[in-house]
Length: 64
Image (cartoon, rainbow, N blue to C red; front, side, top):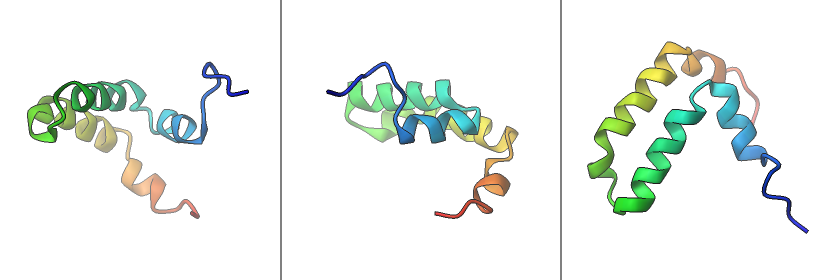
């Protein structure tokens, strides 16, 4: 029995980036439009958040 209120591994990883809201907006935009090109504003907001939180540095040290 899946409990949708519990964050899964993907959600937990996105939350750690500090960009959960920006990621959600980007995912919802793509779900609504079906076209990443129509989500440039959301993609830019996610990218800026990612850079602001130094996620490239953080994720390069994470073992997969």
